[in-house]
Image 1 (tube, helix red, strand yellow):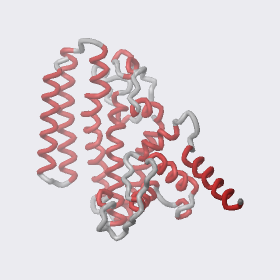
Image 2 (cartoon, rainbow, N blue to C red; image 1 turned 45 degrees about the vertical axis):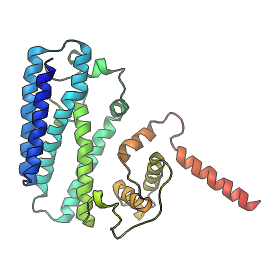
Image 3 (cartoon, rainbow, N blue to C red; image 1 turned 90 degrees about the vertical axis):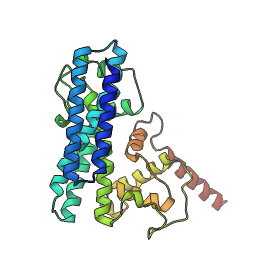
Image 4 (spheres, rainbow, N blue to C red; image 1 turned 60 degrees about the vertical axis):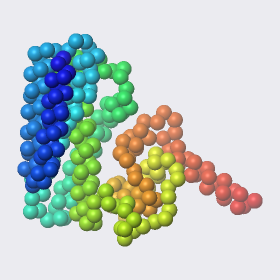
Length: 284
């Protein structure tokens, strides 16, 4: 594999994307141009791979697990961003929020349907890499969103497109959640923790982020906030502002909680035991 040539293409792509962002164009023009730049880079890299191949399996795995998904993921992100923004043009805020929430559910559904592989990838596992990221191991019975599939057996493995989709969808989830927050509350999620916002608390969460995420999902699952008629991101946002904490990747954190081999309600169990102990002490 001509790694120097590939890295040069990636650096040029990064420069192109920075240039497009600095032009501050309309989001539709920007996302369409950005997707085009990513596709050109992918096409050029494909020619190099097909012509030169790989020196060994380790090099092939690294390319299809890391290099290609990064670029293909950017392509999917900008392509989907263009589609999302095309449907928002001149629409009412109410329609936009409804539309964005529907897309958000679809993105989460994709991650849920591929949760086993997501856990494998997020936790940097390697024991199945020789199946997932080697081209002659493709199993066409594997089903995933056709939007993510690049049907080219010379330049695809069984799961490199799924990794690209994971990267793209995680980024899209953040983008959409932020846009919904702007539409509903007039403020970016990035600004929600600033002290000059109307809501401010001097309380600080001193437990782990995992524990807080467990608590948030428990309350949301029980439907005790707005009778269950609220999105998890809104509940998480309130807790962030209330306890002056930034919850990074709370969806991924919850998936880790789901995969626990021991108690999946570790923090809730601690809360229960602590409360019972306090009540017992009060009665003695």
